Image (cartoon, rainbow, N blue to C red):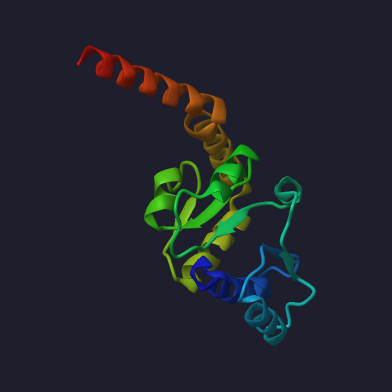
Length: 173
């Protein structure tokens, strides 16, 4: 959909690909922009470098075969994609919307770029390609943060503890 920032991502990747002929991009998901994106890919002559994967049932296989996640959304709730990427040790480049910044800390657990900003997306991808060690270090920090903050077992324990406290207060009142 329009708010996912995919048009800016494609434009940024088109510019990046001039200096990085081996770079490739996979866009997962289906939606009303498929025709627009297909046209943009053809106009930029990127058919051999950009794949529109459509709906992907086994997202883990994408994480395992790709080098980073670029997440240019304009608006999100708490993003499961970011958390999944963190748990798969995938470096993350994400837009600076509030919910992304709630999960990712620029320079520590990922790279944050300005929302709706094609040059910013391109700069983030260029940074990633020039700094693989720093990106790997950030993805490791993100992995540990995800385990601490978002692991389902940990979250369930926190909810259970909270509910017990609430129940005790209710009973004592």
